[in-house]
Image (cartoon, rainbow over all chains, first blue to last red; front, side, top):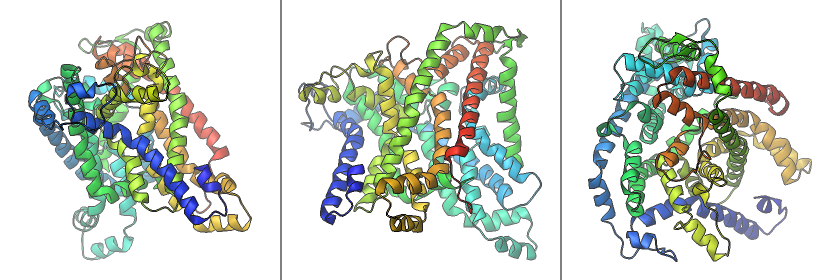
Length: 286
Length: 282
């Protein structure tokens, strides 16, 4: 990097080539693991273990995918994950938007203080509350299914979503609410009929992040889901591994199958994604 | 607003204080907790595995935190230059961070396999004998650090956004003063970015102290981490709580690490007045 930047008066072409060389090198290093995962998933086991390594699979063993998918209940894992995501998305959209509304569009005493309290809960590691939560859910007979992971989202547990929505709500001019008030709308009507429809792009971001979160979540289901029938994709992957450690093409096919939807989703929603992270990371500068 | 308050009390404040209470009790989740005073803490200080797992967690944090911050910053600076195809590079740099953690663990175990993995094959080609990576007690943690560095896309995107928020005039003024590139970095870019850096370092710190998933996948799948070389604190806590149902003891462990992390954070905030620069109009 410093090489590319230090050339003060270079011929432009040379400098640009230098930058690209560095960027391409980094891309190759960072891209390689996923490329190798995909390549391995299309090889025979014999080719995958060959020495010297076989780079391009020949033939392409597409059948690794259907075989892996039918040997563990992969579709079931996907279904479980989608259900987990769907419920929490509803929870987050309803509660986080309400909470964000209260933290941005209504003035009340202690609001900013409580907002700080809420944001600072991000600094408390999950393990500091884990055990009593588990005991509590156990007592309510909620352990074994996704309820312990779903219910909190209906109570604004997703701080990042609330934060993001609040940032967005604050950009809507106060005059919008005032106009509605003149027409006799109360706060809830304003929230429901005025602000929420305007916040569609922000809600889309929240939904996207929540989906990716659920798809990738390992810890939550590990703690609360004990029956393999209810495993999400992440736990399902460990199951594939436990069953087929000796067949790396299958393991890599499973890893690819778990990764591909996220990457495809990312390609279609890149702008929303990047903008959302930027808001979360730089929105509050103190 | 009030839903969050209920949620905060039920799913946060209560369990947090209950953790402290449990930590002074003998509790298996079935019978009601029995008060034992500081017994759990005394046991904790004499438990060699607490020391080992705490060491592993610190080891990971001490290397991962600065390295990943530097890597994220470096990549963001790279991407912040005016080059063609920038968004393609950004996509490639970012994608590893959204790969499901379990999948990235599996991929790393596969490419870093000492005998059949591609990394050691490539090293062999340049006549370097690759180490045992996940299967060597000396290399298992560094390999996990590499895995962490691979997924540095999230802070990178945040830093990139921060870089793009820095007003262009500042660089113009710096150029008029004849600042060299590294002086621009040192006296304009880094100070302007410092609040964002602080925010990210703190979130990373919480994540490092809570390090669990990757180590658990490696360990659980019997994919390496010989002996206790990748036995992390939260893993041990998890095992004490959910395998042995020693909820009092694991609560004490949880509160102990929380106190340590709180101390580190206070120190970090204290020091931040010296290196974090808040623009006066910010």
